[in-house]
Each structure stands twice: as C-alpha cells, then as structure tokens.
Image 1 (tube, rainbow, N blue to C red):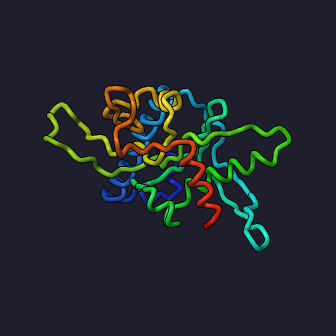
Image 2: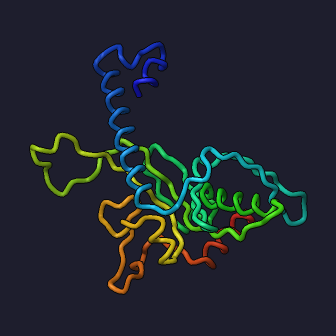
Image 3: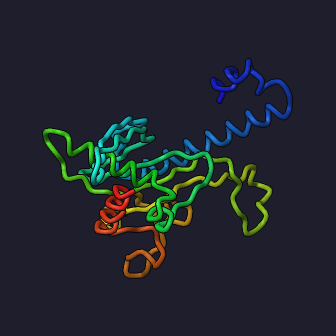
Length: 219
C-alpha cells in the first residue's frame, strides 16, 4: 500500500489519524493475503496459468442466435488437464448449489464454462476437466475467537481463505492443497477416517460439474 496510498486523493490516506488507520489496515490485509496465498502455492501442485484473463465466447441459444458472453477471470490454475478458476473477493462470499441451480450465483461456474468453450475453438483441443471453482478472500474481516488472545499475540489475523466447490477426486484434492485437512488450510475440507470427504463437504463429481455447466447454458 505504500505505492497505492499517495495516489488516493492526493495522499488523503496520510492526512489524519483516521485515514492513517485505513492505510495501516490496507497494509495488514495485503500482508496476510500475500502470506496466505504464498503458503497455498507451496502446498499446491497446480500452476497459475493466467491472471485477469479476458474471454469472449458464443453460447448456443435454442431457437435463436448465440449469445456472446464476455468477461475477465481473475485467476486460472492448471495441473495437466485439471482446471481451477478463482475470483478474488474483498469480502467473504459464500456459494451454494441452490444458488447456482436457481441462477442466483453463476459467476464461477460461468467462468469455467467460458474456459471449456474457448478450448473447444482451438486447433488442438485438450479434454479439460473442471477441478475447482473458488472465491479467494482478500479481506480484513475479523475472525471468530473461542478464547481471548494471549499477550504474546500482537495481531489477530483476519479471516482469509477460499470457498466454492472442488472435484471429488482424491488426487485432485491432494494436488490442489496438500494441507487441506488442516484446520487453518486455505480451502479446508473435513475427511472421514477412510479418506473420503465428510457429508456436506463442498465437493462435486465430474457428472455433477457437467450438470451445473449444462444448467448455466440453460440460463
């Protein structure tokens, strides 16, 4: 934020104590965001393939001309033919299957559809597989505490991580985040003793991902 602050309304974020607090909050948020993202990168076998990726695809419309869909995807990670789409958010949004299937939150699954349709227009088409659709939090929202912090804890880190849906495949889950079972994992998922995700975990089979993609095309 040291480069950003002077550009905001002629350095207004340094003009008084309240504005300096905003500056310090930005610094704190950026610092934890970079720490969390770099930690996730170390634990993931996916590679970032693109940032701020623009797309323009034609989606077939029954009984009429195709609809042109244009947008920009914040981040695309790939491992082999497995694809993860990520959208950075300043809050902590959630997403549910009910919201997707009822057309209320189509952003992430639409991004995935755009990637798959774009791949189909290339000369050498790869059989891409949806691996994850995730919101990544860049937030200064406070986290819940079960007890007061100790005097040694100078700062309480903000809530930062991710939410969304990932492929129900052990190899993909391990590759996406090898520390996924940890309580402070970037994208935590609880597993049973046999290694399968617990009921209610945000995982989808390939068939379920395909069903959602078809649903988006209907909307």
